[in-house]
Image (cartoon, rainbow, N blue to C red; front, side):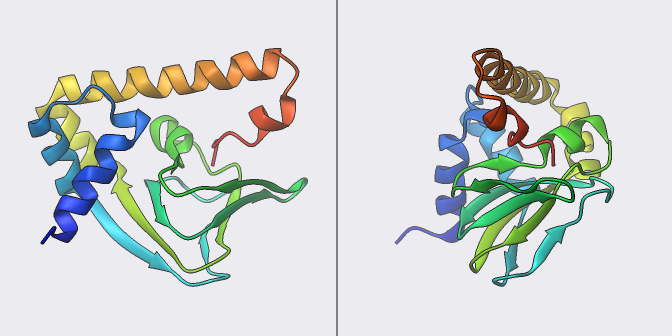
Length: 155
């Protein structure tokens, strides 16, 4: 019978942000992921907050919204969010609210930094993947899909 760790490992291996990691590297990432549960209507973070974590939505529904624009994006299971503020250490640019009971994996910045100092290849691979994701968002924006760009996770 698969364990929760097996399920987390399988999910991590499907996420584009972790594409290209070895089995051992997935194991390192899995060790720094903390499960978190949020109830319907519960706020994960607020626009303007610091960005100590990034998240992977495992199940449920999370909506990103801004003070000025209202709802800008509904996240689907398997999506990474909060990575831009996490990497840049800038304040959140959106608020994240659970719109159904949600289960997430949370990655803390300090714990992640300790890992990448020990395992620099992990850092390179993840940063490359984040850059590719941002590049795709910019390409879509240049094609006129500005709303999709705005809804990309700057949160």
